Image (cartoon, rainbow, N blue to C red):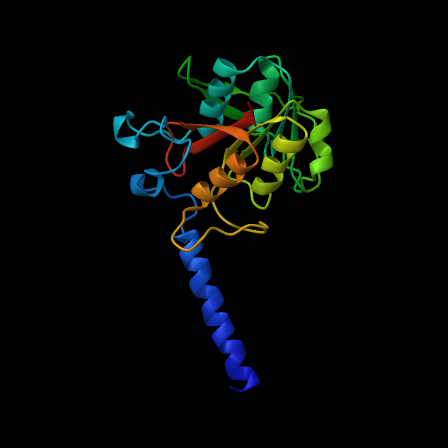
Length: 222
């Protein structure tokens, strides 16, 4: 086989592997129920068919989930973008920080789901922002780390939960810049669950009521 032909074969093999492990080019698509049916530790998640009509307010729903389950503390929103989740948590008594290499301003308004109305965010409002990619050493100053559809940090955050004993919430979407690949035919979330369980961590699944990949993993020590 010539060198050029060998390179073409490697490229085709890599593309096939990528399509198999990612399953879809739509990384925000809902996960098929059959892909989660036999995952260890995931027997408690709520099937999407039992949920009301899906909503789009993912940050508000994540904020509510955290408030109902965890006491206020120091939280980092990894890959937090404009910082709405951090802002909402800050308003609820958390010390919240965004970790994201791209600095973005807060949105000027959001919908309060409890009051069912739009709420303006003042121009002077802000949240602390670390404008750099996440690194495990950053976790030391936080009690909870949240990653909603962030790239390249899911495995790192599980490692942090195992070594630093911080609590971690993941909503994984796609496999970009991760040091781990699923086995052929295995869903990415299943791969992450197995990785966490192998480190003797507790994995608690949940589902938020918004469109797209809405399966979350609450990962912590026993």
